[in-house]
Image (cartoon, rainbow, N blue to C red; front, side, top):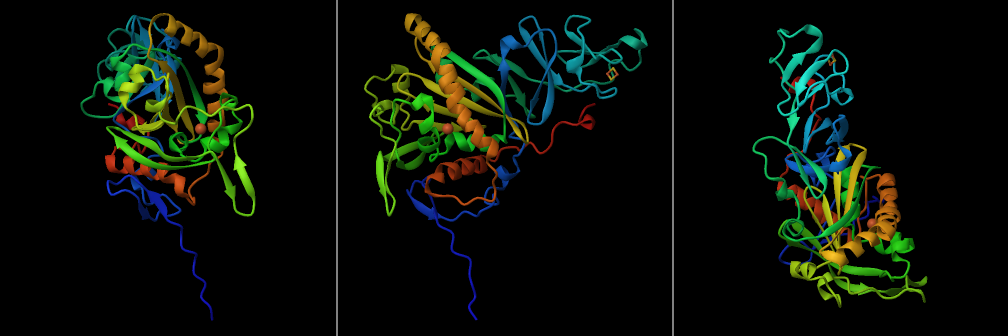
Length: 397
Ligand code: FES
Ligand SMILES: [Fe+2]
Protein backbone atom coordinates (compact mmCIF):
# COMPACT_ATOMS: atom_id res chain seq x y z
CA UNK A 1 0.00 0.00 0.00
CA UNK A 2 1.32 3.45 -0.88
CA UNK A 3 0.95 6.14 1.71
CA UNK A 4 0.50 9.51 0.11
CA UNK A 5 2.20 12.27 1.98
CA UNK A 6 1.34 15.90 1.67
CA UNK A 7 3.81 17.61 -0.61
CA UNK A 8 6.45 19.48 1.37
CA UNK A 9 5.74 23.17 1.56
CA UNK A 10 8.13 25.36 -0.36
CA UNK A 11 10.47 27.40 1.82
CA UNK A 12 9.78 31.05 2.33
CA UNK A 13 12.91 33.16 2.22
CA UNK A 14 13.35 35.57 5.01
CA UNK A 15 16.06 38.17 4.99
CA UNK A 16 15.56 40.07 8.17
CA UNK A 17 18.38 38.46 10.11
CA UNK A 18 21.91 39.81 10.19
CA UNK A 19 23.08 36.45 8.89
CA UNK A 20 21.37 37.15 5.62
CA UNK A 21 19.07 34.78 3.78
CA UNK A 22 17.86 31.76 5.68
CA UNK A 23 15.06 29.48 4.53
CA UNK A 24 12.21 29.11 6.98
CA UNK A 25 8.90 27.40 6.69
CA UNK A 26 5.67 29.15 7.45
CA UNK A 27 2.32 27.46 7.79
CA UNK A 28 -0.72 28.15 5.68
CA UNK A 29 -2.48 29.72 8.64
CA UNK A 30 -1.35 32.60 10.83
CA UNK A 31 -0.42 30.54 13.90
CA UNK A 32 3.24 31.52 13.46
CA UNK A 33 2.18 35.06 14.34
CA UNK A 34 -0.29 34.66 17.25
CA UNK A 35 -0.24 38.33 18.25
CA UNK A 36 -0.75 39.46 14.69
CA UNK A 37 -3.41 36.84 14.15
CA UNK A 38 -5.38 38.17 17.11
CA UNK A 39 -5.00 41.84 16.14
CA UNK A 40 -8.23 41.92 14.13
CA UNK A 41 -9.22 45.25 15.68
CA UNK A 42 -5.74 46.74 15.65
CA UNK A 43 -3.03 47.68 18.14
CA UNK A 44 -3.56 49.80 21.23
CA UNK A 45 -1.20 52.45 22.64
CA UNK A 46 -0.72 54.33 19.38
CA UNK A 47 -1.95 57.62 17.95
CA UNK A 48 -4.12 57.26 14.84
CA UNK A 49 -5.25 59.89 12.31
CA UNK A 50 -9.04 59.90 11.99
CA UNK A 51 -9.73 62.75 9.57
CA UNK A 52 -8.95 66.32 8.60
CA UNK A 53 -9.19 68.89 11.38
CA UNK A 54 -11.27 71.22 9.20
CA UNK A 55 -14.04 68.65 8.85
CA UNK A 56 -14.82 68.64 12.58
CA UNK A 57 -16.95 71.49 13.90
CA UNK A 58 -19.14 72.37 16.88
CA UNK A 59 -21.69 69.80 15.81
CA UNK A 60 -20.65 66.39 17.17
CA UNK A 61 -19.54 63.74 14.68
CA UNK A 62 -18.77 60.09 15.15
CA UNK A 63 -15.76 58.09 14.04
CA UNK A 64 -15.07 54.41 14.61
CA UNK A 65 -11.52 53.52 15.64
CA UNK A 66 -10.27 50.05 16.68
CA UNK A 67 -13.93 49.09 16.90
CA UNK A 68 -14.77 51.91 19.34
CA UNK A 69 -17.28 54.61 18.51
CA UNK A 70 -15.97 58.03 19.38
CA UNK A 71 -17.79 61.40 19.30
CA UNK A 72 -15.65 64.32 18.18
CA UNK A 73 -16.64 67.87 19.08
CA UNK A 74 -14.87 71.14 18.41
CA UNK A 75 -14.82 74.03 20.88
CA UNK A 76 -12.76 76.89 19.50
CA UNK A 77 -9.39 75.55 18.40
CA UNK A 78 -9.68 72.42 20.49
CA UNK A 79 -11.24 69.13 19.43
CA UNK A 80 -12.48 66.74 22.10
CA UNK A 81 -13.19 63.01 21.87
CA UNK A 82 -15.67 61.10 24.03
CA UNK A 83 -16.96 57.55 23.95
CA UNK A 84 -19.99 57.85 21.69
CA UNK A 85 -22.48 56.37 24.09
CA UNK A 86 -24.62 58.05 26.70
CA UNK A 87 -24.47 55.97 29.89
CA UNK A 88 -28.17 56.60 30.56
CA UNK A 89 -29.78 54.51 27.79
CA UNK A 90 -26.96 54.05 25.32
CA UNK A 91 -27.84 56.73 22.77
CA UNK A 92 -24.90 58.07 20.69
CA UNK A 93 -23.65 61.38 22.04
CA UNK A 94 -22.69 62.29 18.48
CA UNK A 95 -26.43 62.89 17.93
CA UNK A 96 -26.38 65.36 20.81
CA UNK A 97 -26.80 69.14 20.96
CA UNK A 98 -24.57 71.91 22.21
CA UNK A 99 -26.58 73.68 24.92
CA UNK A 100 -23.68 75.23 26.86
CA UNK A 101 -20.06 76.00 26.01
CA UNK A 102 -17.59 73.17 26.61
CA UNK A 103 -20.36 70.58 26.95
CA UNK A 104 -22.46 68.24 24.86
CA UNK A 105 -26.00 67.21 25.78
CA UNK A 106 -27.46 63.84 24.86
CA UNK A 107 -30.43 64.25 22.48
CA UNK A 108 -32.70 61.91 24.46
CA UNK A 109 -33.05 63.24 28.04
CA UNK A 110 -30.47 66.00 28.05
CA UNK A 111 -27.73 64.46 30.15
CA UNK A 112 -24.92 66.95 29.72
CA UNK A 113 -21.23 66.09 29.75
CA UNK A 114 -18.10 68.21 29.99
CA UNK A 115 -16.10 67.83 26.80
CA UNK A 116 -12.74 67.94 28.53
CA UNK A 117 -13.37 65.45 31.34
CA UNK A 118 -16.46 63.53 30.24
CA UNK A 119 -18.02 64.29 33.67
CA UNK A 120 -21.80 64.40 33.88
CA UNK A 121 -22.24 68.04 34.88
CA UNK A 122 -26.00 68.56 34.42
CA UNK A 123 -29.16 66.60 33.71
CA UNK A 124 -31.48 69.08 32.03
CA UNK A 125 -34.66 67.04 32.56
CA UNK A 126 -34.01 66.44 36.26
CA UNK A 127 -33.44 69.98 37.47
CA UNK A 128 -30.36 71.79 38.77
CA UNK A 129 -30.13 69.59 41.87
CA UNK A 130 -30.17 66.25 40.02
CA UNK A 131 -28.45 63.88 42.45
CA UNK A 132 -26.80 61.86 39.71
CA UNK A 133 -24.64 64.79 38.60
CA UNK A 134 -20.97 64.30 39.31
CA UNK A 135 -21.44 60.58 39.88
CA UNK A 136 -20.48 59.30 36.47
CA UNK A 137 -18.59 60.14 33.34
CA UNK A 138 -18.00 58.96 29.81
CA UNK A 139 -14.53 57.95 28.71
CA UNK A 140 -12.52 60.65 26.97
CA UNK A 141 -9.63 60.11 24.56
CA UNK A 142 -6.47 62.16 24.07
CA UNK A 143 -6.69 64.25 20.88
CA UNK A 144 -3.98 66.06 18.93
CA UNK A 145 -3.91 68.06 15.70
CA UNK A 146 -0.91 67.65 13.42
CA UNK A 147 -0.39 67.78 9.62
CA UNK A 148 -3.93 69.13 9.33
CA UNK A 149 -5.20 65.82 10.72
CA UNK A 150 -6.96 64.94 13.96
CA UNK A 151 -5.17 62.19 15.91
CA UNK A 152 -6.69 60.06 18.65
CA UNK A 153 -4.78 57.92 21.11
CA UNK A 154 -6.30 54.59 22.03
CA UNK A 155 -4.50 53.06 24.96
CA UNK A 156 -3.85 53.05 28.67
CA UNK A 157 -1.16 54.46 30.91
CA UNK A 158 0.99 57.50 30.19
CA UNK A 159 0.16 59.07 26.84
CA UNK A 160 3.20 59.56 24.60
CA UNK A 161 3.44 62.74 22.51
CA UNK A 162 1.75 62.40 19.12
CA UNK A 163 5.12 63.19 17.54
CA UNK A 164 6.29 59.70 18.49
CA UNK A 165 3.97 58.28 15.86
CA UNK A 166 4.75 60.77 13.08
CA UNK A 167 7.82 60.38 10.83
CA UNK A 168 10.64 62.69 11.95
CA UNK A 169 11.02 64.28 8.52
CA UNK A 170 7.46 65.61 8.71
CA UNK A 171 8.26 67.27 12.05
CA UNK A 172 11.69 68.64 11.26
CA UNK A 173 11.30 70.13 7.78
CA UNK A 174 9.02 72.50 5.92
CA UNK A 175 6.84 70.80 3.37
CA UNK A 176 3.66 71.21 1.38
CA UNK A 177 1.19 68.36 1.12
CA UNK A 178 -2.04 67.10 -0.35
CA UNK A 179 -4.04 64.20 0.97
CA UNK A 180 -7.12 62.03 1.04
CA UNK A 181 -8.83 60.03 3.75
CA UNK A 182 -11.41 57.35 2.97
CA UNK A 183 -12.91 54.35 4.65
CA UNK A 184 -12.30 51.23 2.59
CA UNK A 185 -13.47 47.65 2.81
CA UNK A 186 -11.20 45.02 4.35
CA UNK A 187 -9.30 44.43 7.55
CA UNK A 188 -6.42 46.83 8.33
CA UNK A 189 -3.87 43.96 8.19
CA UNK A 190 -4.70 43.20 4.57
CA UNK A 191 -4.26 46.89 3.76
CA UNK A 192 -0.87 47.00 5.53
CA UNK A 193 0.29 43.80 3.87
CA UNK A 194 -0.83 45.07 0.49
CA UNK A 195 1.13 48.27 1.04
CA UNK A 196 4.39 46.53 1.86
CA UNK A 197 3.83 43.59 -0.50
CA UNK A 198 6.82 43.20 -2.79
CA UNK A 199 5.08 41.27 -5.51
CA UNK A 200 1.95 43.06 -6.62
CA UNK A 201 2.87 46.57 -7.75
CA UNK A 202 4.70 45.49 -10.89
CA UNK A 203 1.75 43.37 -11.99
CA UNK A 204 -1.48 44.79 -10.54
CA UNK A 205 -0.48 48.40 -11.15
CA UNK A 206 1.04 48.05 -14.60
CA UNK A 207 -2.39 49.06 -15.90
CA UNK A 208 -2.60 52.15 -13.66
CA UNK A 209 -2.64 55.55 -15.36
CA UNK A 210 -0.03 56.73 -12.81
CA UNK A 211 2.39 54.26 -14.46
CA UNK A 212 1.21 54.80 -18.04
CA UNK A 213 4.54 56.19 -19.19
CA UNK A 214 6.86 54.26 -16.89
CA UNK A 215 8.05 50.67 -17.23
CA UNK A 216 7.55 48.40 -14.24
CA UNK A 217 9.95 45.49 -13.66
CA UNK A 218 8.88 41.92 -14.37
CA UNK A 219 10.39 40.61 -11.15
CA UNK A 220 12.88 41.57 -8.44
CA UNK A 221 15.10 40.12 -5.81
CA UNK A 222 14.46 41.89 -2.56
CA UNK A 223 15.66 41.88 0.98
CA UNK A 224 14.08 43.56 3.96
CA UNK A 225 16.22 45.76 6.15
CA UNK A 226 15.36 47.43 9.44
CA UNK A 227 16.20 51.12 9.76
CA UNK A 228 15.10 52.50 13.13
CA UNK A 229 11.35 51.96 13.39
CA UNK A 230 11.07 51.22 9.66
CA UNK A 231 11.31 48.01 7.68
CA UNK A 232 12.63 48.89 4.23
CA UNK A 233 12.28 46.87 1.03
CA UNK A 234 15.68 46.91 -0.62
CA UNK A 235 15.92 45.85 -4.26
CA UNK A 236 18.97 43.72 -4.88
CA UNK A 237 18.08 42.91 -8.49
CA UNK A 238 15.58 44.37 -10.94
CA UNK A 239 14.59 42.35 -14.01
CA UNK A 240 12.74 44.30 -16.66
CA UNK A 241 11.83 41.26 -18.77
CA UNK A 242 12.15 37.51 -18.45
CA UNK A 243 11.74 34.35 -20.51
CA UNK A 244 9.29 31.99 -18.79
CA UNK A 245 10.06 28.35 -19.72
CA UNK A 246 7.65 26.99 -22.30
CA UNK A 247 5.68 30.25 -22.39
CA UNK A 248 7.82 33.05 -23.74
CA UNK A 249 8.90 36.52 -22.76
CA UNK A 250 6.91 38.64 -20.35
CA UNK A 251 7.65 42.30 -19.85
CA UNK A 252 5.95 45.56 -19.12
CA UNK A 253 8.15 47.43 -21.61
CA UNK A 254 6.24 49.29 -24.30
CA UNK A 255 7.44 51.78 -26.88
CA UNK A 256 5.70 54.68 -25.15
CA UNK A 257 7.04 53.89 -21.68
CA UNK A 258 10.33 55.14 -20.38
CA UNK A 259 12.51 53.45 -17.81
CA UNK A 260 11.97 54.97 -14.37
CA UNK A 261 14.67 56.44 -12.21
CA UNK A 262 16.51 53.82 -10.16
CA UNK A 263 14.23 52.30 -7.58
CA UNK A 264 15.93 54.04 -4.72
CA UNK A 265 15.52 57.71 -3.90
CA UNK A 266 19.17 58.22 -3.04
CA UNK A 267 20.23 57.20 -6.56
CA UNK A 268 17.88 59.37 -8.58
CA UNK A 269 19.57 61.93 -10.78
CA UNK A 270 17.83 64.83 -9.02
CA UNK A 271 16.85 64.07 -5.46
CA UNK A 272 15.26 66.55 -3.11
CA UNK A 273 17.90 67.40 -0.45
CA UNK A 274 15.65 66.48 2.47
CA UNK A 275 14.78 63.11 0.94
CA UNK A 276 18.43 62.58 0.08
CA UNK A 277 19.43 63.27 3.68
CA UNK A 278 17.14 60.50 4.93
CA UNK A 279 19.40 57.88 3.32
CA UNK A 280 16.53 55.46 2.85
CA UNK A 281 18.00 52.33 1.24
CA UNK A 282 14.80 51.38 -0.60
CA UNK A 283 11.70 52.78 -2.20
CA UNK A 284 9.08 51.45 0.26
CA UNK A 285 9.13 51.28 4.09
CA UNK A 286 6.61 50.34 6.77
CA UNK A 287 6.40 50.84 10.54
CA UNK A 288 4.04 50.29 13.41
CA UNK A 289 1.17 50.63 13.93
CA UNK A 290 0.60 50.53 10.15
CA UNK A 291 2.23 53.41 8.28
CA UNK A 292 3.72 53.04 4.81
CA UNK A 293 6.25 55.43 3.25
CA UNK A 294 7.01 55.46 -0.48
CA UNK A 295 9.96 57.75 -1.17
CA UNK A 296 10.16 59.15 -4.69
CA UNK A 297 13.11 61.38 -5.61
CA UNK A 298 11.04 64.57 -5.34
CA UNK A 299 8.23 63.73 -2.93
CA UNK A 300 7.15 61.14 -0.37
CA UNK A 301 3.82 59.36 -0.21
CA UNK A 302 2.62 58.18 3.21
CA UNK A 303 -0.39 56.01 3.94
CA UNK A 304 -1.84 55.04 7.30
CA UNK A 305 -3.96 51.91 7.71
CA UNK A 306 -6.19 52.90 10.60
CA UNK A 307 -8.31 50.05 11.95
CA UNK A 308 -12.01 50.93 11.92
CA UNK A 309 -13.53 47.55 12.69
CA UNK A 310 -12.99 43.96 11.56
CA UNK A 311 -13.99 44.68 7.98
CA UNK A 312 -13.07 48.32 7.40
CA UNK A 313 -9.93 50.40 7.36
CA UNK A 314 -9.47 54.16 7.29
CA UNK A 315 -6.99 54.79 4.54
CA UNK A 316 -5.24 58.13 5.08
CA UNK A 317 -2.89 59.16 2.26
CA UNK A 318 -0.66 62.19 2.06
CA UNK A 319 1.87 63.27 -0.53
CA UNK A 320 4.53 65.61 0.86
CA UNK A 321 7.01 67.76 -1.01
CA UNK A 322 9.80 69.29 1.06
CA UNK A 323 9.87 72.72 -0.53
CA UNK A 324 8.80 76.28 0.17
CA UNK A 325 7.67 79.20 -1.97
CA UNK A 326 6.85 78.84 -5.65
CA UNK A 327 7.96 75.21 -5.98
CA UNK A 328 5.69 74.32 -3.08
CA UNK A 329 2.76 76.20 -4.66
CA UNK A 330 3.36 74.49 -8.01
CA UNK A 331 3.36 71.10 -6.30
CA UNK A 332 0.07 71.87 -4.58
CA UNK A 333 -1.44 72.62 -7.99
CA UNK A 334 0.06 69.47 -9.45
CA UNK A 335 -1.40 67.48 -6.59
CA UNK A 336 -4.88 68.86 -7.10
CA UNK A 337 -4.74 68.61 -10.89
CA UNK A 338 -3.27 65.14 -11.20
CA UNK A 339 -1.74 63.28 -8.28
CA UNK A 340 -4.93 63.35 -6.23
CA UNK A 341 -6.95 61.33 -8.71
CA UNK A 342 -4.16 59.51 -10.59
CA UNK A 343 -2.26 58.23 -7.57
CA UNK A 344 -4.43 58.75 -4.50
CA UNK A 345 -7.51 57.76 -6.50
CA UNK A 346 -7.11 55.32 -9.40
CA UNK A 347 -3.75 53.77 -8.46
CA UNK A 348 -4.47 53.10 -4.80
CA UNK A 349 -8.06 52.24 -5.81
CA UNK A 350 -6.55 49.11 -7.37
CA UNK A 351 -5.09 48.31 -3.93
CA UNK A 352 -8.48 48.88 -2.31
CA UNK A 353 -10.00 46.42 -4.76
CA UNK A 354 -7.48 43.70 -3.84
CA UNK A 355 -7.74 44.36 -0.08
CA UNK A 356 -11.51 44.03 -0.38
CA UNK A 357 -11.36 40.66 -2.14
CA UNK A 358 -8.37 39.10 -0.28
CA UNK A 359 -9.45 36.18 1.89
CA UNK A 360 -6.62 34.63 3.92
CA UNK A 361 -5.72 32.47 5.74
CA UNK A 362 -5.38 29.84 4.41
CA UNK A 363 -2.60 31.03 2.16
CA UNK A 364 0.46 29.67 0.34
CA UNK A 365 3.24 32.20 0.30
CA UNK A 366 5.95 32.70 -2.36
CA UNK A 367 9.44 34.21 -2.28
CA UNK A 368 8.45 37.90 -2.62
CA UNK A 369 6.18 37.48 0.42
CA UNK A 370 9.29 37.90 2.53
CA UNK A 371 7.99 41.47 2.79
CA UNK A 372 4.75 40.28 4.38
CA UNK A 373 6.31 37.74 6.73
CA UNK A 374 8.93 40.23 7.92
CA UNK A 375 6.21 42.77 8.67
CA UNK A 376 4.27 40.18 10.65
CA UNK A 377 7.43 39.33 12.57
CA UNK A 378 7.99 43.00 13.36
CA UNK A 379 4.54 43.16 14.92
CA UNK A 380 5.18 39.92 16.79
CA UNK A 381 8.56 41.05 18.12
CA UNK A 382 7.23 44.42 19.21
CA UNK A 383 4.78 42.73 21.59
CA UNK A 384 2.05 45.30 21.05
CA UNK A 385 -1.13 45.41 23.09
CA UNK A 386 -3.86 44.02 20.89
CA UNK A 387 -7.33 45.50 20.87
CA UNK A 388 -9.37 42.42 21.72
CA UNK A 389 -12.74 44.10 22.10
CA UNK A 390 -14.07 47.62 21.81
CA UNK A 391 -14.94 49.72 24.86
CA UNK A 392 -18.18 48.55 26.45
CA UNK A 393 -20.66 50.23 28.75
CA UNK A 394 -19.40 48.42 31.82
CA UNK A 395 -15.89 49.75 31.23
CA UNK A 396 -17.12 53.21 32.22
CA UNK A 397 -17.83 54.47 35.69
S1 FES B 1 -30.07 58.27 26.76
FE1 FES B 1 -28.82 59.97 26.97
S2 FES B 1 -29.93 61.24 28.26
FE2 FES B 1 -31.12 59.46 28.15
FE1 LIG C 1 -0.34 48.74 -4.60
